[in-house]
Image 1: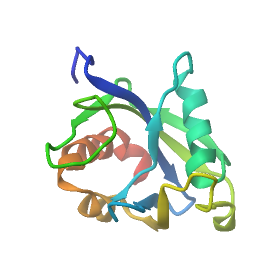
Image 2 (image 1 turned 90 degrees about the vertical axis):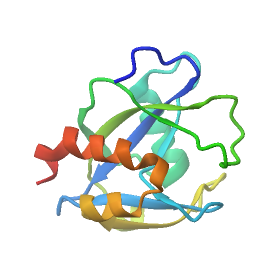
Image 3 (image 1 turned 90 degrees about the horizontal axis):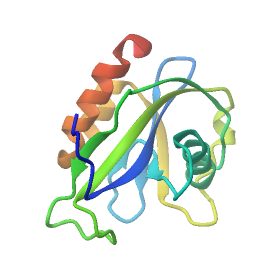
Length: 151
């Protein structure tokens, strides 16, 4: 855990679990990189409000219930080669585990400002294998934190 989060963009991360204990992976349109949905926290917005807003903006649904969250944000740094629009060195993500209580057809990536072009359910180990290298350490920590809920 990093005590000083200055220089990091604050955000929330969504680990959405279906009844088979699979997790939702999404593929970014531009980079074709797989990840769990995540997004920024607006000024004055609570983590939970940001979580459900981001679900609607990115997945077209908020049919989920919070199971737990990691007690502190996890960080990653942007690689120098990554073209990103932020004046930050990386992101500090507050990760949540949620139970999806909708149906697959409730997930709609065709939102007003789409970020993803594909999604799939996956076991957690396969999810970690698909993540870009600069996020792998963070995803392994997510797995450790949520392990008891994913087996």
